[in-house]
Image 1 (cartoon, helix red, strand yellow):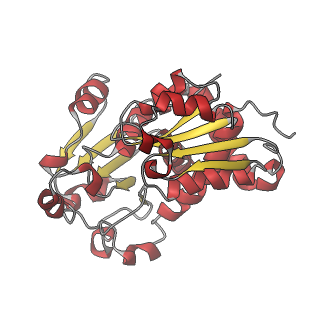
Image 2 (image 1 turned 90 degrees about the vertical axis):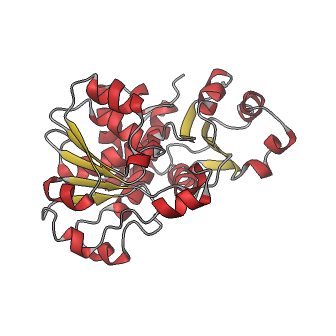
Length: 307
């Protein structure tokens, strides 16, 4: 039995197969509409979510399966003090596969060690968000054709942004990927990413503060929001949240084929005027997220695929 706790749980070959399957689902979704008939997905969301939870639910329903679960810790037995280990033992009696989001780093790992069904990490604190990374990778592959020889700018909250951490760890597998880390000093990428992943692997990167200085060289701009829920100080959050705002004026500085990605939700870091720009790909990301989660569910459940 295989779990997905980190994007690196998939080998390069497994990732290629998964993305190929997701691409086929995007082209012929009806072919897969009965593949999970009789199967159940449990969504255990101890932390608020709209896109990720509904994307998992849509994915399972599109495959002909069903969904059960809870959308906050307050509506689960966690409010009574039940441990993650006990919860997953119980859920394993009800469902065939589980997607878990938890504010504590490592909670999905604890679940996987006590589960008799596959566990998917749907986000654990500021640590990992592997299915968002799979979504990002599918979007890049579909729109750019390859992961090699790209310059990607990651902008905003690089300290707490788990999507950023997971994406960097995945993209360093490919050839000649250059990273431009765009953030204020207070929200710089953590040392373990900078030192243990980028520097240790000899990967090309630079850290800058001004988006305007970086954007002309980028093939991909990955915007992130400043996450209020990761700040202990409201005043500090208010000071940081408006640090970067992508608007049409800044888009004028970018390449004609640069694409803009965002894991969503956005607050004010991308002006709505940018939505009309053909380079804005963040709503396409959302759709690709359903396809890649469908492919992941099929893969982890080892479902026999239609010919």
